[in-house]
Image (tube, rainbow, N blue to C red; front, top):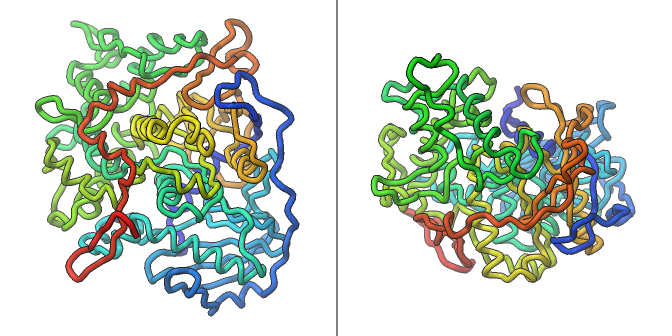
Length: 577
């Protein structure tokens, strides 16, 4: 395999597009609480399509370092014209001998737009042709999927934290201007998972980089999420010999009990827990009774594990080290990071390795010993403070987004409530804190937040994902029409990653999705798998006061970030650049 592309790097782009850029749009023109969408759907501006002003291969040797903010090297540039997608110039770029990325430049017509998180062949049936964007579909911020390479390398920590992505944006815009004779008219970012966090960092630190940002399932306080939270999930379900306590065959039993107790709370039995915060898990229904077949129930030890996973990390005195644990309704997704299974994905073994490296070499400065492992982790305030000490470098928890709003930027944030890779309550608390600090009117002027019940990390599960995020984002940026209720769809998926340009199966569930805090309410009649059977339900706020009672609530604040410069033996950081 070409060592330029890692399997995970390509996969995360595919998953992000599958979750965010799929089918059609219900375009809302009313405020957040509007009960019905406005029609017809608007389209982005019809910009003139531009042709290149130079040959693709001539980009090799092109020096845009002066405007790119760092030493920029074009490693290769060649036209890809395989008949499957529109021909494009595939440009491989290295910035400051650290970050590497691929820039795709259409050779038969460019729509004057830049998209981070797209790629050749991607297209939404709603009419947005991604292959007419100049796009960055893969990037590697120097980690090579291995945080140990960052150990005690302070310059690289700064690049991984925030600087590397910004330099990629500057380099992309400079190369686009050289290739087409002008820079992008509009620049967009649309991604999920850790790239979603990077999108938020871009908005918070570099408000002029992107006109519109779509960020899904972002581990915005990654020092917690990929630190003690994942450490808790992995170690809670592990015996001293490394074997799992709660096993995959027991998850359907627990999930069914949760659905039996909580599925119909919204009036519809659809295998979706719409309000996990109001769901009481009936442990008494699943714990084995004397003489019961052990294959049909959970042992007392397995029930204990499940309780602790829902509760989340805490110290011996009950101090919460995270806002919560995983949410009810997410049980079948526990195989992603917590419970071993026969999935082709890495599951808890991969999560354990990644978490060890993150705590050992990424979040602790100076790094812990090379042989440090999760068997040594302690769940106490001291460990929490040590692993989140550099929150100001890595996390996207700055709640003052006024510079981005003043720059005219628009942001659509979304979170899957069945996510077990990223803690949903962290994103909810961030939004609630930002809205309180900036004010409802100021927040609504540039930001929308959507919660997706029954959806796993960046997609999957029984719940509907946003059918299209990019199009309403473009309409908001280019025409000033804010999104209201959007269309949600559930599309059956086969096992494993799906090719980006594969035909989409027909949706087997459609549903309107209103911005938080509004919910979907079943009419009481009609097909529960059809959008027409649902109307806007009441505003349902998350239990913010309860969730806020944890050790790291102060991480969500205005000015949480700092700007850092490497020194001979560390780094110097200040509140302003």
